[in-house]
Length: 217
Ligand code: AMP
Image (cartoon, rainbow, N blue to C red):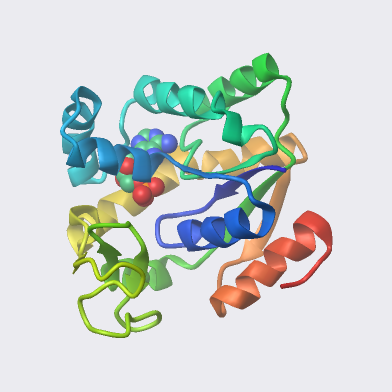
């Protein structure tokens, strides 16, 4: 099952992708996670990406296309994958189409998670991330058992630089300008499936499952 999760920052793509990976035993390919780990490890790619990420801008297409190309060639993608946060521009979508054609694969569904702009700001600025394992939390909607500590690994929770309000506003503007056109792009390809991104994590997951295989959680 080859899926794309599309939606603005804060729509819940990462959370939903993680549930899908467990349910279908397919990997989540999050360009944001891969870039963050490159920044943490201070690789050449990480050093190049950091300033874009800190300001809420998009990392250049050639960098992320290269990441996804390498990742899709890994054996664990043989039975499918969930792309989370890629593609984010029409050029990336075109590159993906070409890449998949070369691998003899097709995207089955593009799941577009729709959330009002006003809701997104509150969701993102309350978001916390584990420094060790990357698990996400929300101070109000999905708090950890012990404040500031990850339930899974005990790691320290922190607020990503790009989750702060000023950066978030920029990320939303970038989304509208560069990523939202992908909704029309995939509609034209008859791949777009729209989901209301409001309600509980389980409700949203149920909407996704109804679409992808007519089953429920
Ligand atoms: P995310 O965790 O998906 O919100 O990504 C965090 C940041 O990483 C974004 O604000 C961008 O700076 C960068 N990034 C992640 N995925 C992409 C992509 N497909 N294209 C360009 N930049 C990306």
